[in-house]
Image (cartoon, rainbow, N blue to C red; front, side):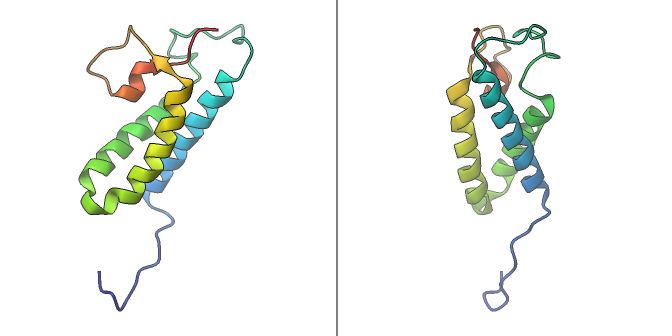
Length: 113
């Protein structure tokens, strides 16, 4: 980067869209964890009924790839992801039935009520 021509921050990058999707998924899981009891239609084992949206998990997959490929430019992404991941870890538990080959965020679920 030429120091005499600083760039404006990007506002339409793919990483920002993925980060927004992951943030929405984390917020949705946090809201679901605050419910005193599960809704009647909800099952913790059913992927269709899960409060963890698949779009959010796919966005997290993409962010992991971007984070690994971006090198030194990925610092801000790592910081933002670290904060969201901590929030996600606080409200979820390890799913013992999940495949061990999956990423850690896919091996988590909401605790039973």
